[in-house]
Length: 552
Image 1 (cartoon, rainbow, N blue to C red):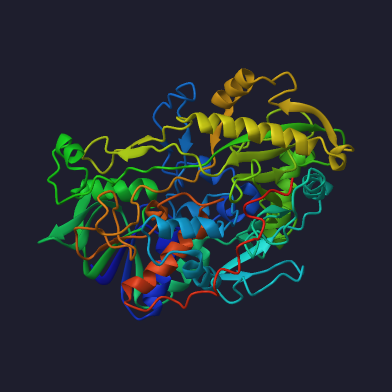
Image 2: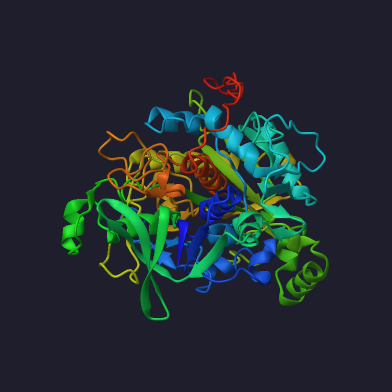
């Protein structure tokens, strides 16, 4: 069992790398602990709440009690299935803002500015703009990943965008194109009515080649000999074996499992490794540190008209929707129902958008539990750039044990101020003329929750993860003591070993993380193959002239 490249993790970035490395003629073995993605729970977009709550598909991780959130333990779903988290996520497709990647470059990730990464975004996608005549100068047209838009047939989707405009915000026709800022249609990784995960886009085509294969089992550590990674120790069927890499090992196991595997392999903070009796191969204090995430709230409003998805929230309707999807791949089952979105600035003077909205025409939790009996709608809202940082550490030296995950959510006063702003701005948007025919009473937080203290109590009790963990193997220059990988994804201090997933993000991006995670896999593939990076995009044409001002 050996190959030129051994990739740990068949997730968003790992699938992209398997595709590109095998496309170049190299032999590739992908190690994945999870199983198949077959079946309607994953493939039907509207069934998105099911797979992330099933132990068959999810690692089932939870945070430690979060001290600033009433000691609640928050769910941290990570995909344990081919496609990784792209097979259990909400299928929302957001590249991030141009300024995110320019910030990466400023933080030491040389070669990762927006002009550097835009060509990889274009290479990876086939964009279906729904016939709206979008600008393909910014979008890809022949990549493996299909990106589409929902039909937005429910009038509430239009009401949300109209209300944003009435509140003084901009409208954007394509937040993944020239201008992220504004209200407009949300994009999804759905194609022909099916979830278009990284497994469907990349891994399954790669596995059809003779030089790419998948190995089931639990990676327990990277084998390092004389300072070089030579393989991966794998546990399967109760037995331990080694999968050898002739050229390199690539960890693409997620922002939770990649740092865990590095530490189990002796790469990490030396004092922490010593606590668990692990011999230190490379003292890298940044391994597991810099953990970031997006939190969000569900601001819920009762609907005066029976037009929400609540009318389908019964077994008969769900059965009919499922049957239609099963036989035709059409209908309500063919969309994730997140079809309108917004990116706005919290106040004048903020350099670029720092609040994200997902709009949903039903009042319901992400786990599928309805919040109230009756028709309603909701906005998922949260700040994009929290200053809070957490860490992933080892619970033990056993690969079978879940790591210790502590996000340290809401540990800065700015977090509380930002969330209170999110609530008040959302109330203002829901109070616009466009919602007058629809908006009844406020379900959550409730009209009686008004003061800073009352809002803080609501936030502490109801803030939930948006499931965007990242940053735990931060990319930076080789002389940065807190960097884990260099700008080509190479683990600093160990030869023949790279990391390519959301753990390498120096700072969290504006929006959902599936798209930038796949982009990382695409770009690091070129570094692994020794290719020159794709030519940079034109010189900064994407920067919107109103950055430093506000339209409100």
